[in-house]
Amino acid sequence: MTEARSRQIVIAGAGIAGLTAALAFAERGFPVTLFEQARQLEAAGAGLQLSPNATRILRRLGVLDRLLPNAIRPQAVVLKDARSLRELARVPLGEAAEKRWGAPYLVAHRADLQAALMAAVVERPDIALVTGARVAGIAVDPQSVTATVEIDGKATNVAGGLLVAADGVWSSVRTQLARTTGFAASRFSGELAWRATIAAESAAGQAFAQIAATDSVTTFLHPGFHMVAYPVSKGSAFNLAAFTKGERIAEGWSGHADPAILSGAIRGTAAVLSRLVALAGPWTAFPIHTVEQRRWTMAEGIALIGDAAHAMTPFAAQGAAMGIEDAAMLANLVFPDDPKQGLTTWENLRRPRVERVLKRGALNRLAWHAWGPAAIARNLVLATRPPEKLAADLDWLYGWEEREVVRR
Ligand SMILES: Cc1cc2nc3c(=O)[nH]c(=O)nc-3n(C[C@H](O)[C@H](O)[C@H](O)COP(=O)(O)OP(=O)(O)OC[C@H]3O[C@@H](n4cnc5c(N)ncnc54)[C@H](O)[C@@H]3O)c2cc1C
Image: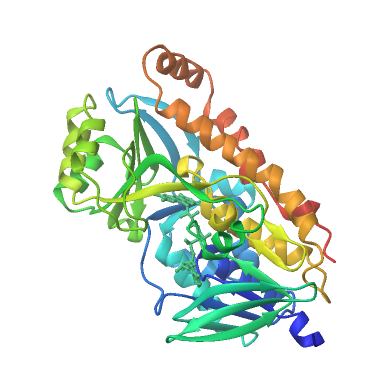
């Protein structure tokens, strides 16, 4: 393989992780080709909370300034009991977050983040973005990795030194590798995420304003159910994401599930919250799939990042942030003359971090959906934790930097 080819980075998927990887590799001087199956990057997905561990990387890659005009800095994360609407806990954000963790805590539409990443990508001549291009097959040999890419019904082979699979929770690269190697399959978690966006001026928006501060992230807790709400679109709308148990439905961002599941799950919540949920429809449902922790790399030159590697439940609001961290750290760790070197180091450094975040998500789910004595115990524990202490509990997560990485 020629030297130029061996430094070529091929990325499957232009989601949050893939676009970040393209920028991070280009910044290190690697030529990048990024294949995205969609013809156009659509405004898919929900709102996102972007914590300082992610925005710090976006700032370094020149993306943050492009995102800020469409993002909001919430003033706090507030937990409320969905029945009594009593405040259970508060983590100060806004300036306090920026001061504490060195980068802003933001909320934005996933589409706005994708657009900000895209705007940075298209300015780089060293990144070739090809849309309407599906990575359909992978072949590896000791020297290189070859992706078979389908464009307009025609298959083309593209060789590179490293293939980065950033093709999401239903990754076709991972599925193909799973047949012969130790890569994991995705699995339905048994949970559904319900999403709605409401205009601030609408009846639903007014109901929301009665029960929550409109400049904060509010999570309403109830046995077997929680709902996260925060402002988007410069405060003219609110993003609502509710979580319930549910049956498996078709894969994708804009699915349909029986609304009776949601109305059943909110039984017993405060009347105004129930009214908000009724007014906010129609809700779209997203089946939450996870990917078990197995391997993420092959020494021949394949690395899985983001949801393709370790899709997680959204209970720690860290899926996209982990994809951003994966991408930035991978680009920093590979060898400049041979990008398939350094993959094991990257995987060994990333695994404990991702596992800790997964544990945090599982703990949040347990605490937020608790009922009876467990919910009482939770409320008592939260009552003893002042906002400053709750913020300090998150230092390991939001204060994370790639400081342990020595650039090669
Ligand atoms: C309700 C909900 C709320 C969430 N909230 C948060 C939050 O607050 N904060 C947070 O950090 N995370 C959150 N997440 C998680 C976050 O949305 C995901 O972790 C993140 O979008 C994953 O990014 P990705 O780039 O890995 O995958 P994706 O965004 O799925 O991107 C994959 C891309 O690959 C493309 N693709 C797929 N297959 C191929 C192929 N064969 N060839 C070429 N292209 C292909 C797809 O078209 C897509 O563009 C939330 C998730 C949900 C469901």
